[in-house]
Amino acid sequence: MQFYDAFGLKPALSLDAEDLKKRFYERSRQWHPDRFGRAPAEEQQKALDMTSTLNDAFRTLRDPASRAEYFFKESGVELSKQLPSGILEEFFELNMAIEELRSGDESVRPQLIEAKAKNSALLVGMENQLVSIFELYDTFTPSEREMIIETIQDLLNTRRYIANFLREVDKQLNVLPN
Picture 1 (cartoon, rainbow, N blue to C red):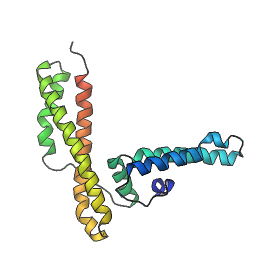
Picture 2: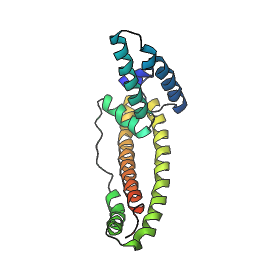
Picture 3: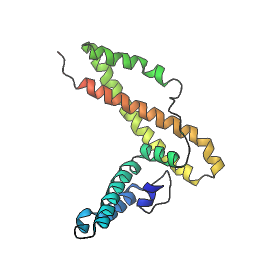
Picture 4: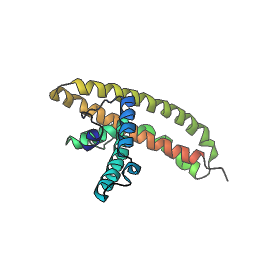
């Protein structure tokens, strides 16, 4: 798993954020292209490639959801993009409110502001839940891991849906009324 290797880490769902950041800065200094200004072209290119890999790896591994998607993809586990049952029904009314606001109906603005606050808090809780489940996953045997992959998958899909919903709400709330 190239991104983990770039930081000298064993592939795992659970990572120490401070350790990851420290490794990123150490390796970024080590491979910074300015340090290779007088080196042969081949070494200069390697420094550029390593810097690019380090940036991509850090961006992916520092976010628990991105890290999980990368980890499972690299492990050959295909995660479903299907939402858990009930999510779409739960958000149907809120998506209708977004459409109404988009059409100029300002009466739904308070409902969306409340939904934004509620779902922002829910998202933070889900992040914490993912971190806890990742720690468990890394300690389990392969057969035990199979039992919680579906839970991880449901959390990731729900998190992605809520994050997209919140982006759309923000976008619509920031549009000034006509």
